[in-house]
Image (cartoon, rainbow, N blue to C red; front, top):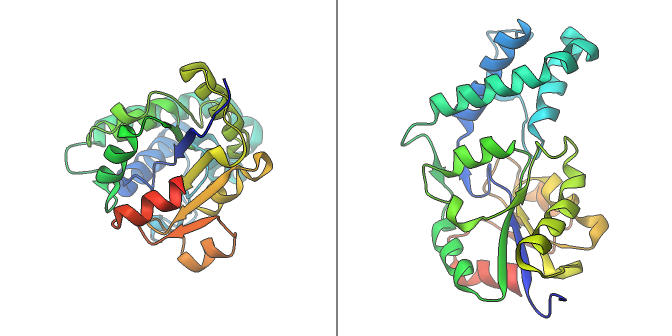
Length: 236
């Protein structure tokens, strides 16, 4: 079945749906320290300087650790490091550690009511990590499927996979501007470009609005607090 006017809307998680930044960041750094006996170059510097925005979890590990321990040691320890990260994340994700972005609850409720809208995830998180982050605010119910960093370390391979999974889930084929990627990083804007998708950037993460605008998204929102504007940007 063709999309026939239907939309596939794929949401990024961190910086777009919610913020669990401190917990996620400290969880992965703690896991790397234990898995590789790895330390940041200067432990007295602000650990927040690491830019994780728009990257997959395996990519983050490789970028942080490989320069210190070498590529071979990094790859050999990667599965263990990611398992340790997920265990640490689950331990640290307590009520109150996840904050929803302005307007996102209302937006998801409204989109989920639209018969011609299919919702999915497009995120660099490992699938288990994604589901863990969405659990405290009860957002998993909106997203029956997705494409994750556990599927590929290359963020740019994930949109095509998400489209295939959407077809498997609902029997519809989505293409071009019927696919809408919503995210807060330049990678969210760019990753679906080869498929000709619609990119909706939102300045609710660490990337400045001006930097997002330079990537020429189809739409750019300050946040989702204006429900009508957000719906027009995504569905228009």
